[in-house]
Length: 570
Image (tube, rainbow, N blue to C red):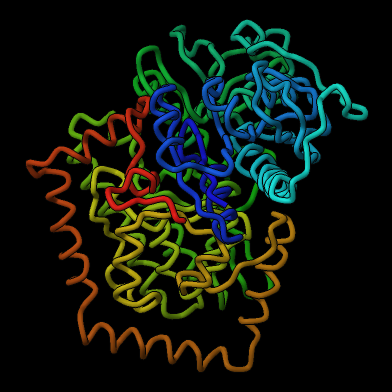
């Protein structure tokens, strides 16, 4: 079928659905929901058999849903209605939640049901639940609904659905999200911030200044110190601020000041944070579940695991340098294999555009950041005493994809999405030694196609084209177990030593043919034009990305129906 995805943005759910539908033979095109007239034009051009709306912030116009079957993906259980479905479920501490695919009608979220899927609701950030459980449930439900529609079945009216327990709920406002630092315990504070994570954040104050706060992590170390004032900001660690609660403390990782954009908390309040005591971990390499840490190391049976939990996968200059130092230290450990485990939701998305945007000279900070990424990639490429494995439990994009490819092996969790290209950010050329790393994996033509087409890859798709080496279990816990088992097997294999010798010999041959420094110099010459040249495309694109500007058109590589040569197949 021809399926039009009508969406507010090309987010991870839209990417995954588009890819899964195409794998099943459907012709998919995408239109951003900018205005009624734009959506109507897209429908007229594409003439879809079915319209799927994975992510909308307003109702589909009657001119469309009255003439076409439109499947709306609602992140709630059957009967749940309203724009804050997941927010309420998380803040209320619901144990189970779900996704419902319903048909668009006049009343929002009240149309007949095509499919629904439920899942246990973790105590976690809303953004994490959305990227994982909601996305997987949505894929399952949408594929079921599409199959039912193709088979000529009819949806079930909401009133006839057995045991529908959802209800109409209003937009959650800041009054319902507000934290009472003197009364709310740590668990309540975490639920409130988690339910607002990603967007819109919790309206609050830091250092007496209004802001929105995001990215909270518990800290159990202060539970026995009742003399501290609840709500007081009492310390800092790397990018986060430690704030006292009634019965403990939480780390606030990110904040957005009035009129600004989201930044690491210690950068959003740089002057104030500088006056606070630094609270370093006793040993950064030890995983400590009682507090917050963004880089950690653990090792067992000759395999080391380097974890780096960077918010939204963005890696600032300082974070890249710290991670490179951690990797260099890890290479001195008595391990045969190093697994770069990344974070739970993201492995890496490359340079930190928000930190760059706030810099006095964004061009200079871009240059520093990309060089720090290159230094990190170089540290990984030149690891010659261990096998290196990039284990992508979460999504990766742009330079993060090629940082992963700098490892000997890339293993991706089924369900993770990869965007191994740069051009969407103002026609960036890209670095991280991609011109050295990519062609041997996918061929010269394949590399050009990846960079030109700018399409996301599923884990299986990445393996199929040669970008990744394995697609492993979709369940996060099963993925971790699978990675550890496979890494141990490789480290203990009879041919391990010979494999390292062959690896060093390949690297020596490659270096003799063309030094890594030459690849880097060529890439950075292009990047310098992006950062300092007369074309401001990168700076404009970054500005709009950071400030979440509304899209004014759908990129042509997504809207196939707007290609000049497009014609509806007979």
